[in-house]
Length: 125
Image (cartoon, rainbow, N blue to C red):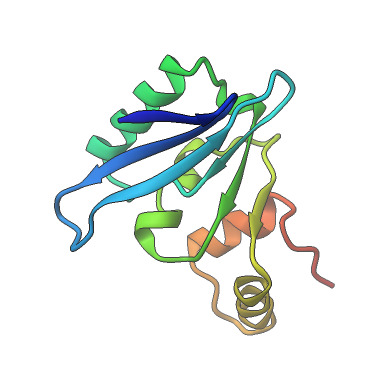
């Protein structure tokens, strides 16, 4: 489901019947230069197909998209790794940034956090 809230600002529902909430609300701010996708849904092929269809319908190219993840639950962060490209920026809130920063100073980083660091969301020493 795609609902245009304001011109160029969309609310989209990514179905997640396996999840207790049954869907993830994603928001998209569309721009000719770069679009911003806020939360992406669970990293599963069936949900990825839904997001692909939404981006196609809205005529948004992943090469021209950045991502904002409201928090690091799989139903909000999961597909970010599938859609972000080398040109994408990934944004998180300060609390998530601090968590990633702490993890970066330890020997543990999962692939998702490594991906976020690689895409310049957080600069580390």
